[in-house]
Amino acid sequence: MIDLVNPVLGYMVCTLVLGTILGWAVWGFGSSKKHQSLASEAEFWEANLNQARRERDINLTEIESLKEEKANLKKRLKAQDKTEDKT
Image 1 (cartoon, rainbow, N blue to C red):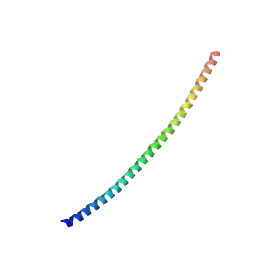
Image 2: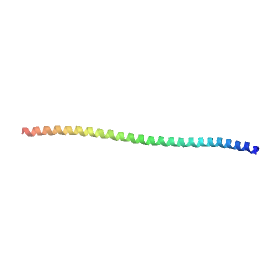
Image 3: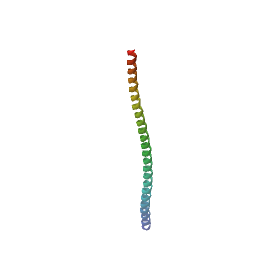
Image 4: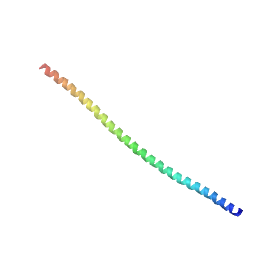
């Protein structure tokens, strides 16, 4: 019976060591894939954010030009009303 205890304990220790190494390797590969997934998702959202900012800038430029056009048209209307009142 004593002769069987040492090999069984040896196998158990080897199994523990190999299981720990295998678990560490699997955990390491899983976290690297998760990190890559998060990085690609962050790049996707950053690209969307940049696109939205560009569209916002275009819209702001259009709004400013429309405001200027509106102000010019109001001036022209006032000038036209003044010329019609004089006649």
